[in-house]
Image 1: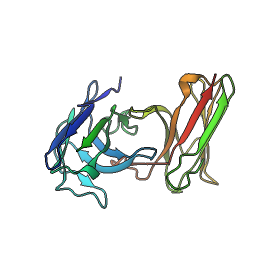
Image 2: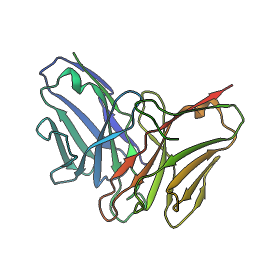
Image 3: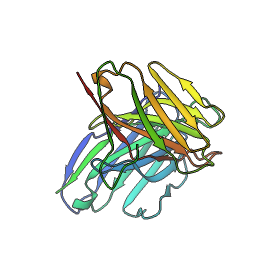
Image 4: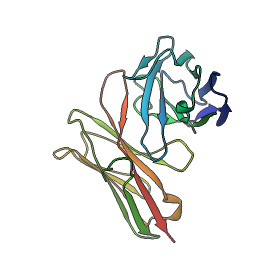
Length: 119
Length: 114
């Protein structure tokens, strides 16, 4: 149980284009999903917290107009990197927690990550 | 272990030995802690968790110890195997209630030598 998938696993795009990354909880309903980015040999940095049916909460320093997050259902959240630039190249990882009050409410289960390379 | 700059602390052990990975957390109000394992190019994998009302919890080949007095967390891996080679992160929950936001430590690279 507690499987989270991401698609695509790897994407290469040209500078100025937009890229959408999907995050799905496969066997549970995810009230909350989180988006992280990770640079090589560094820890995970939280970008935003996304609750189903409401606007995402962004961490300080993360541009909400550049990193668009949509959490339209209890099993799907998307991150769109708009007008991507080479400095946006990174490993993007999502995680999900189960419905509030349940056994899985606290623990975040992570997707496999998406490697974005902007040329 | 603590990281310095961008360099991950590293721990190198022989196969079959026990490994101990340490983590100092930042917020004395944190009440939930998780250890994750991250292999190269993959997302973090849940290993074991512990709540602040406990000081020890055991899983399969792993034990987590929590010392709230000094805000210290450790992960012990028994009979370490080559497949345990990865980066290990501790994470703390900084807010209770409905927002389960985690803050991650800087990670420790574990290398298991055959």
